[in-house]
Length: 524
Image (cartoon, rainbow, N blue to C red; front, side, top):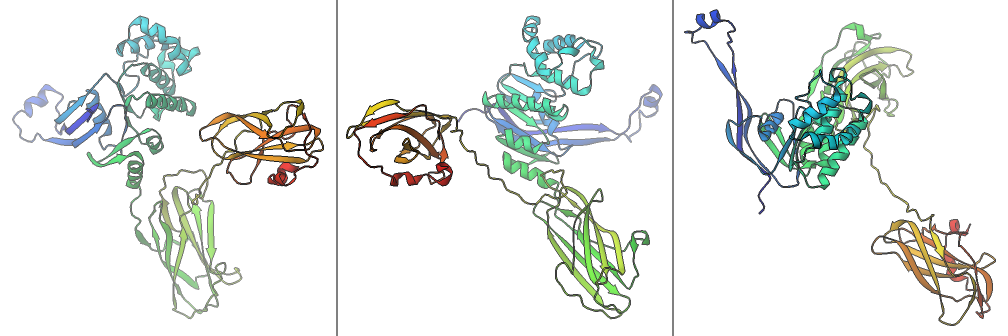
């Protein structure tokens, strides 16, 4: 078995935090003999063990304060572990706290040379790569300005651009994409893709689960200073998301002040139970209770769900659900249970409750924001609802740019003689089937020959078609393609055959039956 590039065994890191600090000589003297000095031990990492293989893109994820960055600094040699062992094979380059060592009083150009020297490059090496560094950062017009006049995003651009020139076997990356506009982040992602293809070993600390799924081969999840999960990127990304999706709990809500309630009061809600949190697979259940203060004819119950901005998302009522209302006597108690799928977008939502008469003219109880719940979803959307959706993408091959070549001019027909037809497609194709037709001068399809699609992707094809058509002139070769191998022909060269050809000595009738293979779209 190959030796791992990074090997971590039983690593723990403790920080000592003294609670009594003296900053003066007098304070030290007065407290010299006191025994009240206390030192708290903060366990930043506890018994961390994992391996990273050569060329692996390895993710480290966890909440803020879980110990991710501490672990990365131990791998970089910035911290030494309190216990345990770490070994790294090959040259290592940390992308941690980009821009450390930059001097704000120097220009961008001068800082490129300064940072390059800190990374171990000679002046000649920096000069050779200077143009590429500036082009990557897209700061050509700002390189002679002092760094203190740069925005934070501009500083990260130039720091990242210099850091990418480091030639290393192992890269340690700590949330370097947290700053920078969308265009710069895309450029960084493209750089990561290139690194992944080059089999560079990368350890990547991030809160972006999309990046974990896209780049990482494996990952670990750190929670409360320990590894709680280790495995494939998809599994770890899901586990990370679940940390922020606690099991929904139901909390009864007592009636609020009258400022957010109005109505005649003939019947009023007395209890509302709603989930505090809704996860990805949860559903909304509202359990309500109302008491009639007097006899009421056919009350109608309803609710409205609103987003955090107050925009209505959806609502329902007993009338809309075709549940006939029942009349109530004084003191009657009604229990209601509403259920709805979790189509809500991520964030806080409020519930308004209503009780009206059948015509909606009399309002017995209108309770605004009677309950609230928070939806936690991995999919972030700008829309007020995010129902479960699926997408199937089908690409139609570009065969409309096909060229078809067949002999033009006079061609003598002989039994067993073949017409060689060649064609090229605008896109390399795999599978499916072709159809080659011969069309006479009057536009009738008089012969058809199927051609199997290629087993491997190809854009050039040739077939020999044995002519079985009557004598005549103005014949053309037509090619069509069916990606699915059924009957959905896509016309490749309808009316664009480069020339016509003549057949002499053929039979005296046309074979029309084979031409039925074309559907109506082709025949038009």
